[in-house]
Length: 114
Image (tube, rainbow, N blue to C red; front, side):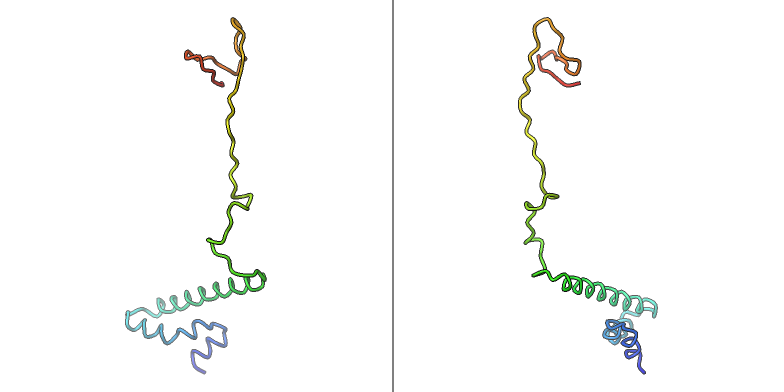
C-alpha cells in the first residue's frame, strides 16, 4: 500500500492529493521533513475548513451565498444608529431669583448644567 493510499484511507484527502507536489517543492526549497509535513497538514486543515463551510451553507438551504455588497445594513436594527436632536431648552428664571441647583448662569448669560 502506498503512502497516498494510506492517506486516502485515513481520509486525509488533500494531503494525498498534494503529496507529490509537496515532495517536489520540499526538495526544491530544501525543506526539512517536519516543515514539509507541516505545510501538508496546513493545506489539509484549510481544505477541511472550506468544505465544512460549504457543507453548512448547503445544509442551511439558503437561496444563494450572500456577499457584502448584497447586505442591506439599513434593514438590521443592530446596524441602525439612533439619532437624537437637541431641541432648544427654554428656562425662565424670575429676576432676583436663583436658578435651580442643577443650572448655573455663566457671565455670558448662558445656562450650563452642573
